[in-house]
Image (cartoon, rainbow, N blue to C red; front, side, top):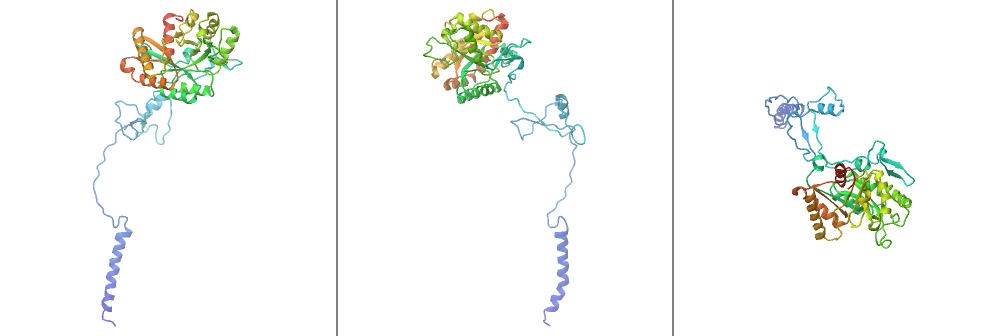
Amino acid sequence: MPPWLPSALAAVPLCLLLGGGLYVGLVSHPDGGRPRASASIDSAPAPSRPQFSFSAQDAGQQVAPAPNEATAGQLEQDSGVRVLRPGGTDSPNSVIIRVPETGVVRLAAAPDRRLTERSRHGILPRIGDDGARPSQVYARPVAPNVAAAPVRVAILIGGLGISASATADAISRLPGEVSLAFAPYGGDLEKLAQRARSDGHEIFLQVPMEPFDYPDNDPGPHTLTTSQPAPDNLERLRWVMSRIVGYVGIINFMGGRFMSDESALSPMVRELAERGLMIVDDGSSGRSLMLPAAAGLRASALKADLVLDLTQRTDAIDRELARLEQQAREKGFAVASASALPLTIDRVSRWARTLEQRGIKLVPVSSIGQSRVQTTGSIR
């Protein structure tokens, strides 16, 4: 027998004992081999109704609740929404998420069935049986304090609908208070008009009228002319009016000669007034008889005080905007017309950002037109 064997055999029981201990300590115990510490935890009473408010800007950031803020259950009850929760009708841990207003003013849906008339051309506007007028129903809403502001300006930008990209640029860059006028020609006109209204812009429709240099300068195939019989002009007008829905009124597209001819102009103005539409003269012709022809009719009408962009230069447009402000300060309000050209859109959008600092309110054209009717009882 080797001399070391007895010692080795004697060590076997000791190895088995140590191995068993290690197995119990490291394997069979759930915390075997892990460092452990014990500490007492004091429980604090939970608040009776913890509440949190979140906004889009503060997403992920806890905001202190406002005093006396309503619970989720109370808000649900007030809004008429019923929420079923397991284990109770209200949850003390309900989270109230508040989404801030987007700032877009919602216009009335169009078309309003009360204000529609079927024709061979399509849908035409009309005064509803209840007396509702397109000039009022489709107008951009204005807060009473804004409508009564001591200094107000309004701008109507025309020429939309011909170029989809230019139209989209005007809709997105101009404030919602700026009114937009669509030409009756161009593809996808209805879709573009509804997009403008969805973004908070009230819309007008441009009616092509004969200029002094017609036909060298031709507003299009449905132009109202002084040589046409009145019934033919009215048919052309009805075709134009059927192109889109939801517009507040009309504004001339060119028309120096047509608007200076009372016999040609009067049937058109009467047709528009009887349909409850607002009538706007863009101010481009000093010989226009648009407002005199409308005198005595129960409709809203006005003439623009100036055209902003007869000269397509930055300094010229800025100068006209300054004139617009000056006229508004002198008489309380002023209206301008312009075209949807890139430079015009850029200058008007920049100018509009600074109006509030100068104590001037930008309002839609309908706001000034309606206030004048309420004051005078007729078109002026």
